[in-house]
Image 1 (tube, rainbow, N blue to C red):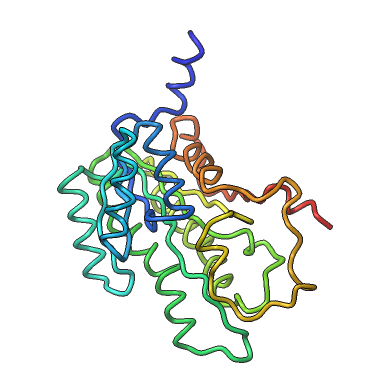
Image 2: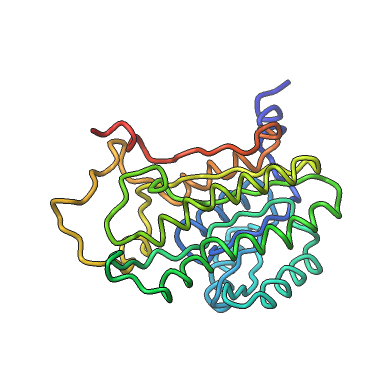
Length: 261
């Protein structure tokens, strides 16, 4: 078998519908671009529809099949309706990437329940609702599917002070992945978790955090900062036919951060 044909069989996503949350910018946009270049019909979601449409339009100009939908993480009915809109317009997604998240911080001794509630609503409740809605559509379609949850390398340690709610919610996402993988495996749906660390994005560089002591900043990854497309490549693997026997696994994409002493 010729090499291009062999690799296409392993990694091509031709015609597969993919829903990527938080796809308007940063990591989500990089994921959407990679999946679309692999042949997927990508729908990117954002809280601001104009921003999502603009990002989708930019990718369409490159000949990629990308649409946009508005999802409000604070409104369950909005999530239900948006999922129904995607299913009606594109067909049931075969790939769900729970990427959107909130990273604003506050020190634990100054913590407010409002901050924790909002962080958990976006980082955990929202992915759960999407797995419920899109997972049911996958089950009804009877063709299997892929769920990839984007957590954080900080869930494995070396977190920055002031990101307690963020790290707690992203750590809990691992439990959500395990529960989802357990309940969906009989339907041929795999669920895996990625832990990005040190990704160069405008949002990541300007995220609201408490003041950080430069002497307490974690070291940079020895292999350099990752790009959104690097994360997209890992998502592509889990979404591809090559990973059809892999579920309930966690992979860190930290550019060697784990080996820094």
